[in-house]
Length: 184
Image 1 (cartoon, rainbow, N blue to C red):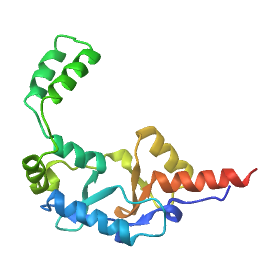
Image 2: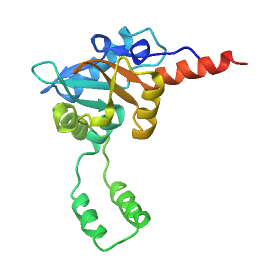
Image 3: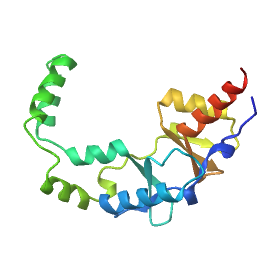
């Protein structure tokens, strides 16, 4: 197999969907759509938006799942669930109660969507964890280990201490399994 480095497969940050702290969810989703239309190198579309501070440094990420969680919002029931966990109710029982509670609230309605669209990205973005970084000069083997061990869908690629790109699991998957297919 070709000795790929992370920088061979990463998407440069200049080609990735980014927004600034203070951006609304709706504006962020529009930026994601524009990035998907503009980025044609891969058939795999962007599935996340990077959030930048005023200095242009990455401070968070919003995945499609995070955006959907923003619609659901916090419920008063979450406090009750935390209280129930103290009494060692099974996770299956708690999940059943959560599903029953959730079935009583409709989230895809005009008011909920309007409120969610106006939320600022920093309210629900995920801050990068130490295991989500990989150097651009690392081997793809190292990146695969980080992706698998941390169950990440992407890694932030660094040059020195600066973030210069994103390594997406879809691009690593495509490269590895393309190589595998050539072995037949």
